[in-house]
Image (cartoon, one colour):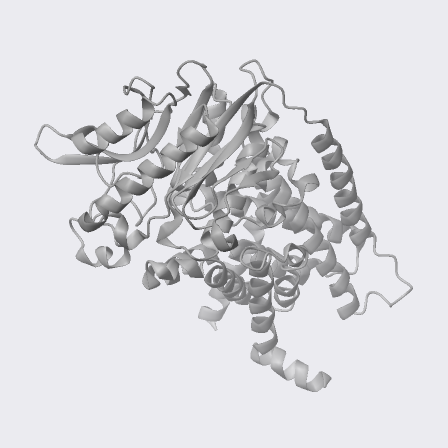
Length: 533
C-alpha cells in the first residue's frame, strides 16, 4: 500500500487529488450546501500536498485547487456565459497560488519538526492567504465573491470581529485553523510525532485563538444595543424573469405587477418608505411619461418610493450615455435624490474595448455598456430626514462602498439588486450572505430589495431577520415584505473598520512579504536550474 501511494505521489496523482479535494471541501462551505464546518479544514489537503512538492510544482497545485473551488462555487454563472465561467474561475484561481508556493518553500526549508518554525508558518500562511483575498477584492476592478470569512456568515459570534478587521479578520480565523491542522497532520506524516504522546502546541495555539475569538465575539454581539427611530420599510419583489425584463411585450405585465404590489404594500402596511429593486423599470423613468406617471401616482398615496431605473444623457457629440440608477420620489411626485451606480460589473454592465474587439462581445449578453457614477449619495427621507444610501446590484459585496456611505452620514444601507440573471441558483444566497458583512463592519442595518432572490432585513449585528418567502416556501417569487428597521442616530460612534478601513488586510500584506519574496524566488531559481539542465 505504501509503495502504491509512493508511486502515485511520484506521478503527481496524490498531490493533484489533494488540490482538488481542497477546492471541493472549501466550495462546500458556501451555498448551495453551506456546510460551513468544511471551511475549517478545506485548505488542509492542499497544504499537505504542497509540502511534498517543489515550489514550481506548487504553482500548479495552487491553481488547480483554486480553479476547482471557483468552478464549483460560481457554477451559476453558466446561466449567462459558459466562457465567462471558465475564464473567471481560471483568473480567480491565481490567488490561491501564493499560499501553495509559500507552503512548499517553507516546509522544504524548515521541515515540520520544530515548534518555532511551525508557529511562524501559522502566522505567515494566514497572512499570505488573507492578503491574497484582499488582492482579489481590489485588483483589476476586483471580484469580492465568496471570501473564506463569508463561510461563517451565520456564525454570529465570529463575524462580530468584522467591526475591526472586516471580512478578512473572520477569514483569517478560519485560515489559521487550517494551517494548524495541516501542520499537526504533517508532523505525523513525517514521523515527528507519535499518536497519544506528542503535545501539539501549534494546534493548541490556534484553538486557543479561536476560543478567545468566539468568547469576545459573543460579548460583542450581546453588547450591541441599537437605539434610534424605527423606520417601516416595504420592499417589493416583482420576480420578473430576466428573459422578459427588457421585452416590449412584457411591459404591461411589469407595470401591473409593480403597481399592484406597491398598492397592497402601502394600503395594508402603511410604510415610511417603499423600495423597488434594481432597474425595476425597463425604461429611463425620467424620459417615459407613462412610467413616471405610475411612480408619481403611487408616491402621492403618502409614501416615498426608492426606484431602481435606468438613466441616460446625451453627450456633446450626440452619443448617449447610460447609467444604472436609483431615484427617490417624494410624496409630491418629485425626484428628491439620485444615485448612479459607481462600481460596474465587468462583462455584466460594461464591456471594455467592445467597439474595437468583436470577440469580447461573446463573453457577455450586454447590448450597451453603462457608465459609472462618480459621486456617493446619502439620501434623506422626506418628512423624516433619515439618512440612507443605496448600493446597487453587487455593490453590497464591496466593503469600501458601504464604508464610504456610512462615513458620509448614512445610517441605513439599502441594496437594490436583480439576481434574476442567475435564479434559480445559489448565486442569490451567496449574494445575501456577502451583504451580512457590510452591516456588521459598519454597525448599521441593511434592507435588500431583489427582483428575485433574497429580499430581507439584516440587523447591525449581521443577524438576518425578516426574509420574503412566497408561496411554496420559495425566495424568488413575487411579493412584498414590511420590515421594521431601527436606524441608528447620526451621532452614533463609527466602528474601527468604518473609520480606518482595511488596516488588518494591509498588516497581513506586510507580514506576508518576507514569506512571499523568497518563496517565489525559489520558483524562479528552480526554473533557471531546469532550463540550464
